[in-house]
Structure formats: structure tokens, C-alpha cells
Image 1 (cartoon, rainbow, N blue to C red):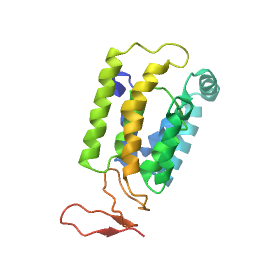
Image 2: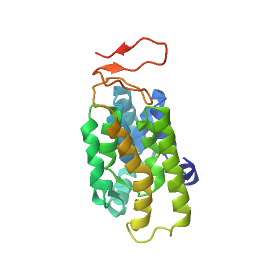
Image 3: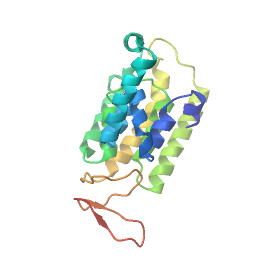
Length: 213
């Protein structure tokens, strides 16, 4: 979160949108990050909002698409699966029934900058306090490691930034995702525990179980 704010990135707003549905229309602003969250929490509002923003962009700047396509062609970003160890993230497909499994799998296919701020949305894969604190701890270690390692060099930022974000962001998130049972839980919200009984979301203490159709 600190790195994202320092770098003036969209990821804090996009992550918040998973908890505040009214903000999900903003996911279309940066598809490489928004698509992973849409894969986890799809809805018609996001699609409609993306279409409206797409059309409004032409009204504000008719030639914006040419500049965007040019930028994507020259950008040095690569999908995680093309970095060392990145293909391991596809193991998240073993949990495809859960939002976090789809989120991490799609993230591995998106061309993103190999920096820690891109891993911020992965805090949403946690479904318990222990998992949440573990991911936050790993991210803090990554932030410290980034402060004491050489700056990114070369067109693809070099191997060190990728190693930092992979070991402190992506890999811990994969471990958390694989710990969850692969049960269908339609409409489940972030941070909500999932029971190993298919279709059942674990309620807060003292509340009745909620069956998901």
C-alpha cells in the first residue's frame, strides 16, 4: 500500500472497489489490473461502466486510443508466467471455483510492471485474520527488501524487482489460495471464510450458516 501510494498507482482504488461495488466501474480504466479483479468478482455494472468510460474517453480526447496502443507496444512489461517461477501461479487454477483462484490465475497472464504495488490487490485472497496478517507481513518484508536492493535496470526492469515481488507478494498469495477448499461459493465477498462443505459460507460467530444456491 505504501509503495502504491508513493508511486501514485491505481491499485489502492481498484482494491477498494472489490469492497465498495460502486467503484467497480473504474476497473476499465486500467484493464491489465482491472481484469484480474473482474475475473474474481464479475458483474454487469462493471461492464456497463467500462463501456461508458470508453465512449467518454473519445469525447474528451478523440485520438487517445492511438496513443494507448503505441504505449502498449513499447512498454517493457511482461506477464508473470514469462518471468522465472511465474508459471507456478497457474496452480491457482486448482481453485478456479473461488474468486481468489481466478484472480491470481488471470493476474499471472497480465503484462504488468514487476513491482510490489501490482501485488496490492492480492491482499483480497485472504479469508482469515491469520492469512491477512501473513500477507501484510510478507509485503512489508518485500518493501524492506526493495529499499536495500539495486534499482531496476534494463528494458524489463531486471531480475531483482521481479524476485522481490514474486517472493513477497505473488508466492505467499498462491500459498494462501491453495489452502482454501475448491468449493463453489457464488456471491462470496472478500475476506469471508469458506467452509469445506460445498456451497456453504462460514458465518461470523453466532450467526447461522448461509447456503449458496
